[in-house]
Image (cartoon, rainbow, N blue to C red; front, side, top):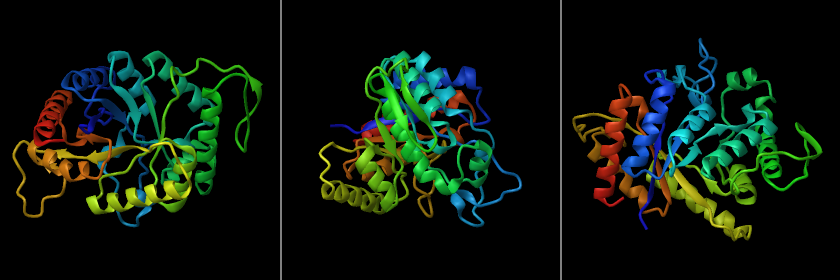
Length: 309
């Protein structure tokens, strides 16, 4: 079976949210993509209080200065499409009030006819946690656990009941319900995060940080699932952050997924051999505008399929 392909939607400064998100989503659907995706970055601290991913001295990308709200972007895409799935890779779930997030995702799934994929992560930005005011960053793992629990409760049958550290629902009717059970996928790289995924989630959202690294993480996750007796398959969606250039990049010192559409497609091939089900290709940061993004996305799709992805 061919690997499914997804496309990152335009959320950065060079795009017009109301016009370009629906336009690119429709183009992705026409081109043959199976899904469209958003990511979350809530703010850009200036001056920086920590490095990217919490790594000292690592600068934040300039594109993070302007990232449109992911749920608004998905809603625009839902209204403009009929077939593609609507995913997040990822929502920083602990930045959201769990009950309201569950209701928003349920409503989006209902109006889109059952196309939402809820990809959650814990995030790493001290400033984003301080701004959200939900819980301190040191509690992010426990908050994610509760977000998952609240989502399962709200999306399930009435009466809804939940008693946690953040949300208290004694007994309530909550609607609309999603059109089908919304899959929850997690960005899990640590042992504890993998345990959460195996016990409570439907799938995994790795980042293409090297074939060997992803392979090791995938094997560790599969081993843990077998150890815990999990029977349900684990869905996998690999995120690829690519940067397109019209001319092929020189191979000497070329970074993976930097270069022409042919080079990006070729870089995808080793990951398909890992048995991952889907690859999300995000090329928005290198495109000048929506027209170039659509052209690049179509070319990457065609080259990837021609290469055997």
